[in-house]
Structure formats: structure tokens, C-alpha cells
Image (cartoon, rainbow, N blue to C red; front, top):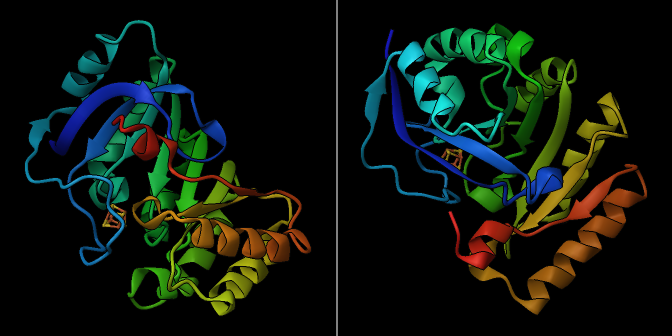
Length: 223
Ligand code: SF4
């Protein structure tokens, strides 16, 4: 089985609680939410890999054993991912999955070989898309078997109603799951930070670990 991979590179994690950690990024090609406006990177091409060939490529970064699966949406290629994960876990890598958290069944297929799940809440007022609360609920129910944290992009259109819904959903599962509010880097102003800070204060009354962290890799202009 072959997987479509847009790129593989080593860099520093630019988001969330693992900020600054060195990782090998495997950027999967393709996403099920094509109209979402918060993509880091325009993915216009890909290379096809057999799982074993991709593992060999990872091994060329001999000084790093921490892999970030990102995209695109890695879970779109779940059968390939399942084969790949068996190999990379056997080889001793720590695995971090970056996901839009809308494909819970696919997560269930690979959860045993994941270490850390960085899941997004796609807030309808931020994305302009329909809501994914039902998918996120099913997803987090499975993800909590592993280390998990949740991120949400905060932009000028983000509403308190969505923040309340996100907070209630998290609190329903576990108040200690970290919730990362991520101000949109492309429109980062003092006003937006102020708004995000107000949301952080609201969420912190209910959840125990709420953090305000912009996307540092984009601010620093690195990949
Ligand atoms: S869900 Fe993530 S990968 Fe998919 S289009 Fe949106 S930002 Fe890009």
C-alpha cells in the first residue's frame, strides 16, 4: 500500500504544549475539510511512499526519534497510516498526531500506536464551516486513551457561544485536558490578543489548564 506524502522535514514544533520540541514532520497530502481557511501550507503535490520506504527516510534523520504526523489530515489515509505506525513504533519512535478531529472511526483504527494526540476543535464561527461537535465528541472519547490536548483557532469572528460549547464539551470528559487558544497568526493584533485573553479567563473558570499560544513557527517565519 502506498501513501501520498507532501513532504518530510525536521523542524521545531511551533504550536501547543510541545512548542520548541524537535520533531520530524511527515506532512500527509489531502484533507477532508477542503474549504477550511486555516491551512499552514498549500499542498499542491505529493510523492508516493511504501510504509517501509518512508521509515527508511525517517531513519536518515538519525538524531531525532520524535515524529509529528501532520497534513493535510493524516487520518484520511488511515489504512496506509496503520501500516506505517506499526513500523515506526517498532523502530522506537514517539508519535504525535496533528488532526482536525473529525474522523473518529479512523482514529479508533490507529489509536494503539499513537502517543500524543493534538486535536483541533473546528469552531464554526472561526472556520465559516458547519459545526463538528458530534464528530469532536466521538473523537475525544477515543483520544482520551492517550495523552491528548485540544487547540482552537481564535480569530476576529470567533464567538463566545462557540467557546462556551467547546469548554462544556471538554469539561464533560475531563477538566484537566489542556485547552490551547491559538490566536490566528494572519490577523494577530492587540485587539485579537485581548479577545483571546478574555476567552482564556472564561475557560479557566471551568477547565484547569487553558493556555494562550500563538503559532510560533509562523511568527518566526520558519517551517
Ligand atoms: S482541517 Fe487542517 S489540514 Fe484540513 S484544510 Fe483545515 S487547516 Fe488544512
